[in-house]
Image 1 (spheres, rainbow over the protein chains, first blue to last red):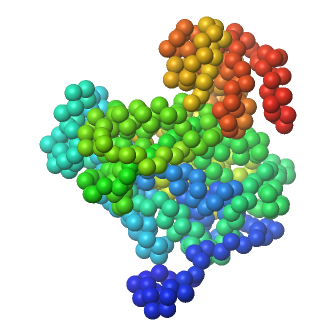
Image 2 (cartoon, each protein chain N blue to C red):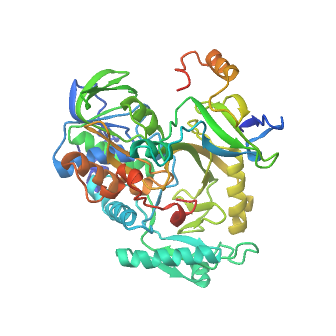
Image 3 (tube, rainbow over the protein chains, first blue to last red):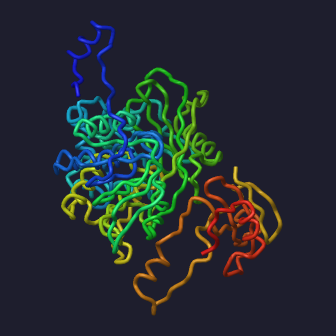
Length: 414
Length: 107
């Protein structure tokens, strides 16, 4: 693999850009791999990457039914933060955030991480108290967040209407080191690095069955034939239950649609991410100038990758109240992704009833921010059988009542 | 937009008039059951991509709970029926089988 650098750009500029290589190979599957990761989204590719980088396991295939990064990795609102209430969540999300800081250098691929700061608005007394509690928790966890008053909020976001009649802004939870990254680049960067380590990324290859022998996984059946493996990592977000069914077990997961949409591009007007959870909406401005907007999920099981219209309407309405400047903006595109929700709104990184099968799912509406940390912990879990970061997120927590309750802490937008 | 018909009052309306209530026909396990059964009852969900039986409430209408058979991959509704049943009625099953011959049946 040729490294990307300023010199590479200069060199290619001199020869009509004829020397760029494909970022990753697209080989046919081999007969057998040590580890097969199902799902070439951010979490799957990151799992493969850290398996190779940290644990030296490179006999890995990443299998993808559609195209690389075409699921939730390419459908989110690219927000990165780690201001969670519970210790296990804070640990894994903060690990992810800190890995994002050096990810471009690590992967030699510009993921455009932009730690522009993130505000979660407090718009009711309850929310204010909740966020202040989170700030205290974050301080104990060693995560830099602070509670700021409405004047400071207005200073950071001049376009914000802090005197809204129904929900005035009473302050905000501010994480200065939160921000956004280029979501596609995260998947592409990991894919390029994985391919460079000799791993096979196999797209357009759907898994149709899981083979087992005496309670241990032996391989998978795919649209490109049978592939054997020692370990199987299921990292397929919204389709986790479908894969679990093939493995013969059930997960505490329900799949629902979450939507996002973007406006036409406008001049820079907001250089932080703003989440307004009481009114159900969040917004940031992309580097192209589009206002990137997200809202709440649908309430019913859905695999269609398109959501209900009334959520678009409700969220846009709420954000127009919050940011009056956007009231005349045209919306350009809208899309949906299928998110895997657990009861406690925390992920599952775990062994399963079948030996050799591991699941990484349940990230729900907030998976993008966790990609590097999730991959790091999952790789450790597969390679060593135990990961301190993943330990609390095992499947047994439901049976044992050890929930990692983030549904209250995170509200809607998460 | 998803359109449902309430079997209790007969009104056909858009999803904004209804509130979803999760998987239908859960097999209940009480204090005397095994940990695994109790855990399964509380947390494990079928969550299929395809035919799904689920609970709804006509929240902004007659207020009654009812059940629905719906395809989660297409949002097609096969039928709705009263909540006072322990298994999907035969006519709903028949309708699903006509439209989804590959469906494995109600488990």
